[in-house]
Length: 302
Image 1 (cartoon, rainbow, N blue to C red):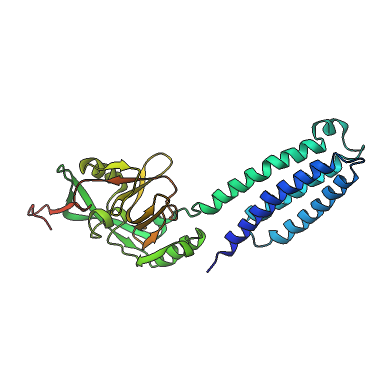
Image 2: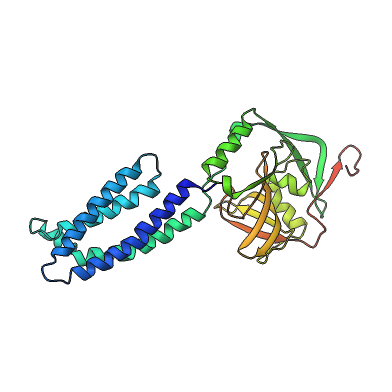
């Protein structure tokens, strides 16, 4: 099912980005005509149309749709006002019609690029997990052992009854419904890191993932291959999410599978998930990603 909001934003990109540039070029040409009457008429007409369109779009639509249209109306209204002697003389010296149309000519394509980037990027932010996670319980007598013998604690979650509804809300708020494929329902036994490094048996802390990458000799790669690890970082560089590369068509078309905290598991492109857009691919010579799971009581593998 197509996304109506995304389609409306894309339409705005075309109207303001392309239409604004065409309007600016037309009015720059008309400003050179004798009397400049046609430039004044076009500016007034476009201002009225833009304000009417912005008012019509304001109800029930995000600001990304109607604010640019209203801004176009303001620019046209300003250009129209500069044709009259009653306009502030000092202001008119700074805001001549040609200068305004040149500004619009530059701003329209820049807005189109910015808006298109925002349309293609992830919108969701996976916040509110504390509302659905009632407890993070350490699993007694169990440790996860890295290749260098470092032992890490294992955990399991206790979720509230609203966890599934919260997951659905995050997906809807992030505009992700048509961009992901669910591969498993929510499972409090593990999180994203635990799904990869323990086969879904336990949960791991994000701070321990950096130790795993070091102890198991992972290194960053720029050419992802099936089976590689993808690691997401926040703005401060801390690890927040991990996933597996399932299929690579080319460097711009990669399919990831990851578990979203203690919730469901999904197939998705790298950018369509709730953890941000900063990520790197990792590879190791070891066979698989799972760590050894040992019992503290017996010292044997589980």
